[in-house]
Amino acid sequence: MRIEEQLFLRHVRQELKLAGYELFISKGKYVRDKDVGPSSGIFDEGGKRLSIAVGAGNWILTLAHEYSHFKQLQKNTRAHRVHDKCKANIWNWLAGKVEYTPDVLNRCVLTTIMMERECELFAIKELKKHNIRFDVLKYHRQANAYLYFYTFVQKHRKWLSPRKYSVSELIEIQQLMPSKIKRSFKRMPKGYEELVLTYCI
Image 1 (cartoon, rainbow, N blue to C red):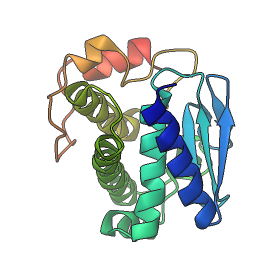
Image 2: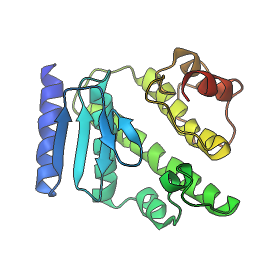
Image 3: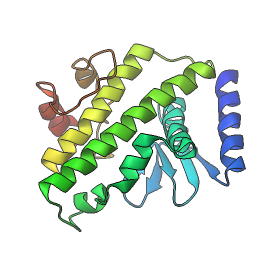
Image 4: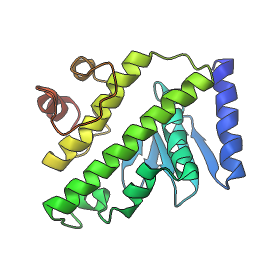
């Protein structure tokens, strides 16, 4: 672990502790969430816990992302507030526990994308601020791939399989993505759906 990564990890732990949150570090490739299942990182607002799997590739980028969700909460950003007002629970919908009208589901997906997009921009600032080495253009492409995935979820009602690729790490998907983080994710790029269905679900 580079010294910059150690210092960033220490900073995150201190900031979380000051706010009454816990940092949980797993040496494995996954941490578990009751809704999402296995994941490389999770910010649990209600449980006051940020969990990160340092055995996963690029864990420092995942840490920056999940920490940025914490920063959104602390700053009470508009994107965070609007998302909180959405009455739909996308995880319950994916599990088949509830049904929503198209309007309610669309609002939930759009507010989720808006919140996650802001989170990605926060993460980039944090990484630069703490001198973490990373490929910015590649990060932009991976962020776009992840944000488009919520549009895919709305259409197909499917989530990622932990046994397959994530949408952000598949090279073929990255190649479809622009090198700047987009503002709108309504229309998936040609070929995106087929790649997700084949390699990620």
